[in-house]
Image (tube, rainbow, N blue to C red; front, side, top):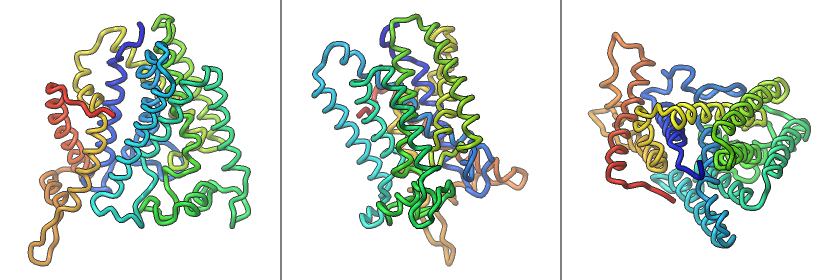
Length: 369
């Protein structure tokens, strides 16, 4: 199997996007089932798998997208130009989404999900062009061990000791020092996609890149799957063990979190490949392929929709009502638990996007960068 388009990869991406819509768009943030919330600090929930799965998928897709050009000897300058343009476009889309609709440049959030994806993609793609497989593992160790040292051994300026607490860790200090006024609005003094935590996030992309290389190699797919599955299990165990001294934490993207979620991603993708691409159980896959093949539409569209539902409002007498609260009212019944109402509201947005993406798919309209 040489450089195919893996149906399972699109399905994996689509499943991740569906989960993203559900966790990002509840009817009531005060009524959400625990697995659909991020861990308060240390720990990992189902929701905490969404972002690392995205970065992992970005890494997997790089050799599948650039491999044939690399093999054909396409000039490095052409590939670098393509990579840099894509990085800039994704980063700018992330900024535009962060600032919508007011675009106050004095307070616009500079870090963000798409911004981190852009940076990780750019660095990992260049690593693919220049570094051997052995070099990738060395790079991974440097990122994870280096971040562990910085976060657990270096004293935080102004505090005099190393800390892993939300507002007193080294990453938070660096974010506040360099990006004050341009951080996550819920904290204002640190950012979950901050500067320092991007270092271990490269590790997530590298794990995806290694997986993509193995899926593209000349060896038999079954042998590759065995290796990927075994490696994922080992990483999962290592992450769990490291959690004892460097806790699994999405918000500061700890090294143990990279190993744990990277292992989970490998196991999930390997299982999907075995089920879909090898065994041929693929009749159900098209429902997720609609999402997976138009990921930018889903990401940007769901973000804009959530903003608009909160921004569109009207006044009835002295009472102000947002479009979100008006629509959410149709899901609330005395006999229905509030958390279920909140979940159904989120799921209705999945259905809305499903219908739109299905239409785009059959029109063969895809947003590609």
